[in-house]
Length: 350
Image (cartoon, rainbow, N blue to C red; front, side, top):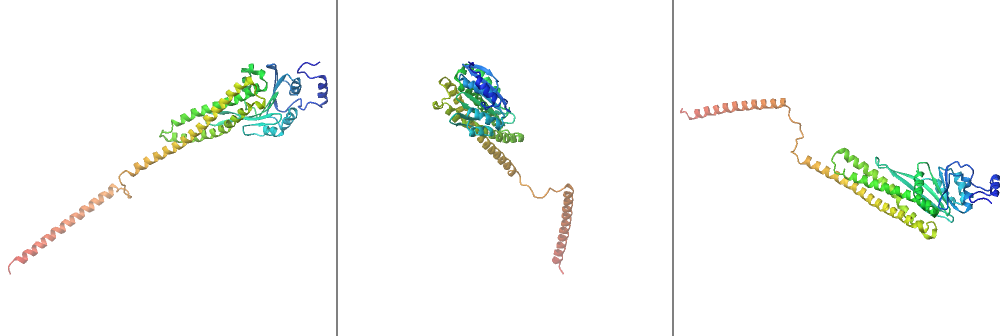
């Protein structure tokens, strides 16, 4: 009799005949596998074609990770796990909305890890998709940019929770994603505080820096908001008892993740309002500075539209005026002498 987790002779014969396993011996995509049994890690990086045998044994849970899979790879995984074609299509297509879709045999999760560059204020996102079945978690990454090692570290740090099945694996994934959201919000808050200190700096380079950084941070906040806000509904839905995903011992851990999601969502909303206020304040400050400049210009002495005279023209003007005054004086003296002569002639006797 074969041991638990080992394929039977009949299954081995059928596999050699190519009639049973839907997953090929070699996938084109880079794959990672793990098997947890009895609350501990039993196998790691085993062949993908052995997944069915481990699941048929009925004593463990499986994690399968695919990095940059081709459509043919996901089609094979779909047939093996009974995944819905629409969920597989969403896993292939990039830039999905963060969401949790419910199907008859599994759940589909689309979410993002984020990273903020403090130097540029730009937000980078890394997309991941996950198929959640009662006994398997299948993650699909678009490229190697998503740090899967971070999730493995979370599972290692919480290995005492491995007996809770898929809820344990899913918790490690969600905990990492939400922590990246919270870290990005904290970093944005710090950058916005630094931006506020530059508002009343009157140097022209600082003015341009405030304008540029304000728009960059606002753009990053809009992107972060699209990633963070849907996670409230995602985590809240997963905690519903009707889904039978989160076990009772795991409920406090999911509640902790949900609290972080709420804080990150509320913080993102307040920061968006703060950036908008910063932009408006910057425009107001610029308007006040322009008004002060105009007042200084208009309150000065009146200026003539003509240019000031040169020293040479001033000298010529002075000489001309002196000549005119001299001629005027001579004429006045001659006229006075003539008048006096006429008066004396009239007063003498004949």
